[in-house]
Image (cartoon, rainbow, N blue to C red):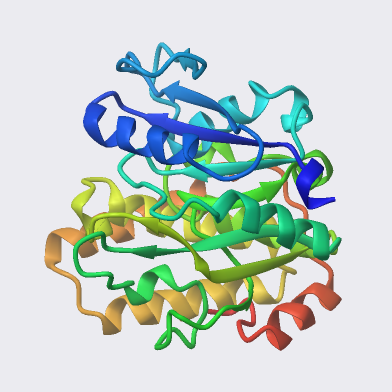
Length: 294
């Protein structure tokens, strides 16, 4: 089954990292096994020169990370149905090993319940994996693979059957927490998510707060995530825990002001359709080590 699994790749770009994009495309082309068809989405920007055979879509405006990736999904047919699985890769990363795609095929083929695989992100110079890139609470050992409850947006593989069943990423989020929204919906539908330390994306070490809108988006989308997906009793608990964690981390005054602005926006603006997960999914998340209150 693994050898017959057809993979595609979605890469979104702002057109400002042509050398990094080319390195990523070359690393995808070097993957073992069948050729991976690639779609590069210019998110409100022209796509820089790409090798022959790479498809491009240029959007007239920036739809944000989830919006851009959704366009890439649909470039492979409804819910990506032209392929069996899709790799989502950041345009400033690259795959250092040639067996990553084949490992994905093998993992999906061996486990019919596996819906999403999240890769280990490592700095290309130091090899270090940041704690925030290990999607579980016990993140001290990034070399340990495990079942997890969310995934990393720019370094993952998704079985397209998952997208057909639960839908794509929440486009209105624009940036931050869109992966967890999809992950919770997938888990509620019975799919599992694996963190695989042996599947690596090299990516320069960065701080997420480098983005000007980071604090506002993080706060707003955290509230939206809860309003959309959690049973009603857990919504205030989840949001309250994250409010306390934010205060404990003592962000700067401008950052805190932006955070509270986003927090208010999360309660006052529409969050999209509400589909609360089942209580057995809450228990599944708890057994996997991350109850949906943190």
